[in-house]
Amino acid sequence: MSRLRTAAEPSIIPVALNASRLSRAAPSAAPVAKRPEPDENGSVRELDGARPGTFTGTIGALCMFPLRGIIAACVALRVHPNILTLVGAIINVGAAWALGYGRFILAGLVMIVANIFDFIDGKVAYQLKLESRFGAFWDSTLDRFSDLALLVGLIYLYSKLGRSDYVLVAALTLVFSIMTSYARARAESLVEKCKVGFMERPERIVLFMIGAFTNRMAGILWVILVLSVLAVANRIYYTYLALNGLPMPTKEGLRGVFNRAFFWTDERTTVPYDLWVIAILAFVWLTPPDWLGDPTAVGPGLLGPFFRN
Figure 1 (tube, rainbow, N blue to C red):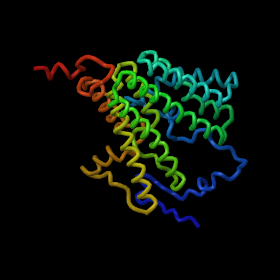
Figure 2: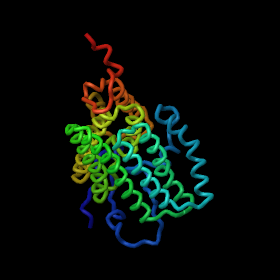
Figure 3: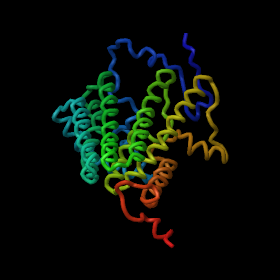
């Protein structure tokens, strides 16, 4: 008999017994989704369900127009989704190379191409009825590889520039990015779902693109690092509460506002999500690069002129 207990306050984050996940290693004839939804990596399904009334939902809806055409073409040509996943990972290595040599605009363009493959592979698998357990494993494994490659590229760049401080920042970002995914995977072997914490893979990838195109990679690294540490802490705390049958943090009153911001349980393309995105972009674009000791960016930033003597 399972010793797992359901979490209190199911209206916030329901947690149920997870017998199917505990028996995951057992063979089964039933097809399993190639990329469980929602998952750590995000998916085109999330974009399909984007809320157009929000800032991020509108962007997601606009992005779906070209993606639908690409998906339809892949389905018509019967391109295997595992091939799409592999191609995306290989292209991401090119982005890592460009980051390593400080060619940020090129890196941003390559990341866009690479992550088109990453966004569409699950949808193509669904439409071609090629969903499989191995597909889910393959996708998750190559996503981790892509994450590592991009950050290794930045570590190489900062080491060439003699900036040991940002070598450390990039290395810590790498560690906690992987820990974010690991904490959820391990938690979900014990509880049904552990989708808490703001900074997941889609957020990291989009922020890397923004950092590359605007040459604000130092600010991006600090954002990803801090919010990844917070996401890991959220997942550890959530799992502790769920396994011990303790109530989840309240969402009521002033304390609830704090909990909602720093114990993240909201979905993407919601108003709270938009607020976090706006706060992140404000920090990245307004903070003068000199304040962060940015190894590559120059200039005062948008706030700099207001603080000149």
